[in-house]
Image (cartoon, rainbow, N blue to C red; front, side, top):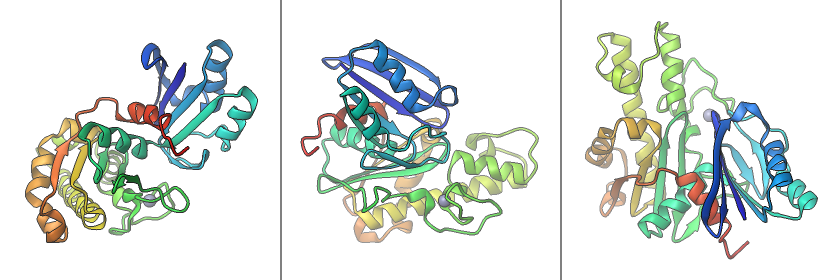
Amino acid sequence: MILLIDIGGSYLRYEIRDNNKVIKKGKLKSAQIGLCAFIEKILEHEKIKTVAISYAGQVNNGKILSSPHIKIDRHNIKEYIEHKYGVKLYIENDLNCSILAEADCFKAKDIANIAVGTGLGLGVISSGTLIKGSGGIATELGHIPYKESPFTCSCGKNNCIELFASGSGLKLWQEYYKFQNYLKLEELQKSSSENGIKIYKQFREALLFACGVAVTLFNPKILVLGGGIIQSNPQLINLIQKEIANYAMPLSTENLEIRKSYLDDAPLQGAYLLTEDKND
Ligand SMILES: [Zn+2]
């Protein structure tokens, strides 16, 4: 049996699969229990052979390096669990898991996935290879330098693009302008307040800039957009289709398809695909 986990800043979702059939699933608050402690609890009660984790943070070779929103109860999680329980453990960054699932869905070898939710993330498969970088932290799109802001990003800088084009960024700017109630992107767009419109416009501009950077750098055949903010604002896909040529190198957009993610559960599906990695 396989234990699949998708852990983000808010929730830990899991599935236990037997021959790829879901036999148990659940969801709990990430703050409730540490990831390692949760796995140990499951392993004590279920006959699991493989654990695969999609992790909202930086991961390299089975080690958790950092996470902006998850409290880490053990960094060397692969080594510890495999040694103690004799199971196989896979762990990969959530965007990297998602892009594996999207590439499988679109049957694509050159594909990039931008997720706009709490953060702004990117996963890339180029010529069939997942782009990881020397330390496992390549394609951290949300942290490219963009414009100075009054905030400090989770990475320590104050000019990351995620501070403008993400759910957490929208929240920070509304706090900065002393909004009484938190407005969603679609509410900001229709807002009668000058600052509301300003936050919407700077979000839009930063998102287009980020998409342009991803397309110029990686020249994907397909750019898939997903994440909570995209799901609630599908019109952003049309906007990006219309404007991308103004934000990317023209040649890199010639055969580009910009699509919305079809998958409800890309991180979990991608975690499952990790267990099929023949190179491991
Ligand atoms: Zn940053």
